[in-house]
Length: 250
Ligand SMILES: [Mg+2]
Image 1 (cartoon, rainbow, N blue to C red):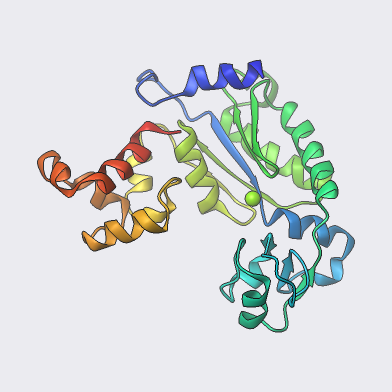
Image 2 (cartoon, helix red, strand yellow; image 1 turned 60 degrees about the vertical axis):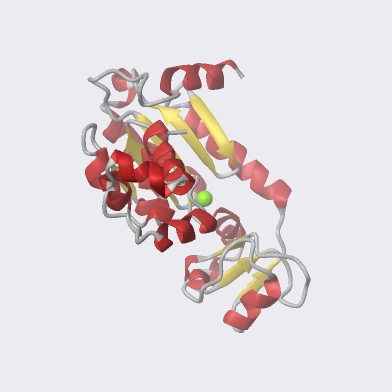
């Protein structure tokens, strides 16, 4: 994939970026993708707690949950039985992966109209570089907005996006934007944007690191960045890991 290689070469790390970096990295993420695709054929289920993955009495796990189902604590990778215990009136649907791939291809085709540099990172999310596309689509923020509207108009599938200077910040931004939103983090405001967020919002910080950080009294990103260098070393691997996730991008 030459485009992918180019993307990495250009945006591999924060250090490599020039001072006049602009927010042109756009992370697009489909909202509750598998559920949204199923709802195209079952519009009567809109607004209801819907779980995709199988029957509630099966041994499998949840592969997607609607936002209404998430309110009951249901999330992907949770056993179906647990999900049905949390929300007995949820509607459980089987997954149809070929169908999701087809819709994913349709979304990818739309993305390709907005930038020559598109990296699909999973079936329902992608990074685009919107730098240099101004003549076709206007400034990056306008292009990002137009892109999300185009996806929704052409596929009727809800999606969200994050526009920032790095992949990491763009990903966090799209997550904050959900559902059906767009969050723009202008160049220079990354730290202000990340500071109040719970550490878990940073991709790469999982349950284990979150717990280790909490044991040190650290719950939000600002606290990681506020730790003086000397203390940081004594606190060991967790903070180092958290900081490298923060400032390296990925
Ligand atoms: Mg998604």
